[in-house]
Image 1: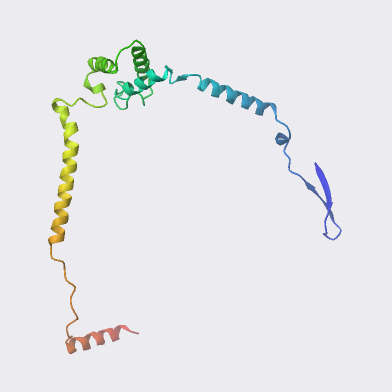
Image 2: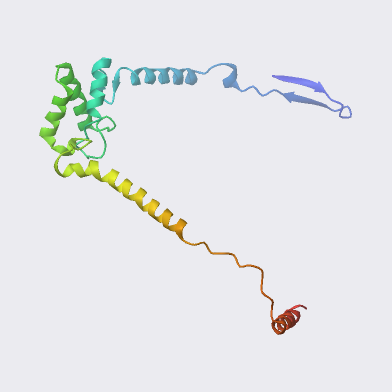
Length: 188
């Protein structure tokens, strides 16, 4: 689309082209195809399956989430099952949902996994035996840190403060004269 305009440029006439790219004037087939494909991907992604695990009803889902958050993924023992994404973690998620639908209690499910994998599968170790230290030591270390900081602060506050010197004492006139002579030598 072009339009001619006369300008006050000494009688010289020029044309101005309006920028209107073709793809803005009418949708192309590729743009329509892109929109359709993106829509299909969105529909497939939100089709009730997340991570290959079927989504149960809300009550079972909440109980499953609680159980999964108390179990460590046995493939690497680095994350809880609810946060981990691996075939073994997905299998445990499906098993937990199946057991909850069958009417098994959360405690029974945890006990079954504890029996199969030992205490290592639990996100929080049971408070018995040597594991008690995991619950007792952090508060003890915190209390020791607070006590140390209080002791140090009290000690610092009790020390006498360094006093600022009072007015300068009279300077020996011979030293003052020598000082002035040396400074005069430095000045150009």
